[in-house]
Image (cartoon, rainbow, N blue to C red; front, side):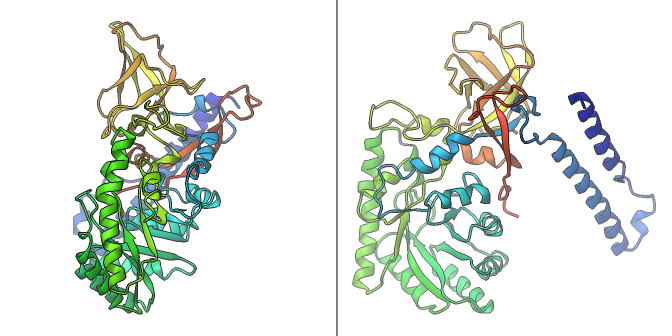
Length: 451
């Protein structure tokens, strides 16, 4: 069948599903028994959910198809670049340093399993819901690098820790949280639950102060044995990842970060407390943490995709901005929907398609995956992006052209999408003559606000 007839068939299926959904209640619905009203509403919501699933399936690209025929915006992952990045993270890293990548970047158990297969010792998660999705997807060794607080959340954490074959750990920075964790684990008959003390090494966000305060918290964890187990310290400086000069990032690690870790380790040793793990570092600094001789585990995350902000970091080798040993692997495929006579073009990717918290996306060409430095992106609102030339001359785009946007910040951009469209041109051309072929669809299973 032609593409038009396939699209028509899909629309008919969607319409049929949507026809099942009743949005208006009978005039006397408010007089019906409460249970009946909720039952009717639940049935409608189930039908609406089914219809939404049909809509989602209708816009998902077909594996093996030309990606330029896909609906836009689409979140693309370049397969060979992803695979290369998974290996490149171990470049220049001592074999004594374990890599525990941060899955907050991709939020996908599939990519998490690829990281473990490439040599990672496990994964990090930024929050409980991410850890739940990772374990459900077969990633069984997950460290939550934040505090889990509140009776309901801690109960969920305990249930997750009880998953057969799972190794789940968490960070703490208060005795109250430690006591709550211990109570929940005892209630669920869990022993040996691993807790790391998070220390503040300059981020001034979460974390107990290094030295004596950290040692006292470690003692509180050990006092809850055998329910809890003190597993080490978490020392991460997020703001340092985007200091542009490499010597600036190194100076922070060698100074504030290392001094806090060293002070805490000395205090723990004096107290007779063993510290199995010292973990931290991100894509911008993990080699510096590894070089201190204090860490035995690092947590880079964005390296799998890279983004514009990381590409602005200067590289030690040539003092030029760039992604270093990694390659940009994440893009938004977008379509030009309008071209102004005044010289600008408009694409269908606005704030709902790409995160702008770390600046505007960078324009790339689909044919060569090369940046286009003469074109800049300006936010045009929720659904629109405006492309303008840097010198004010008219753009050379036509309605229907496709462009790639490299996000300024990969993590929150990924969180806007339900799935990745993985593409490849390794075989140069498909049977249909397409240069970029859809290789796989990977769900972003851990996306969302955390429910």
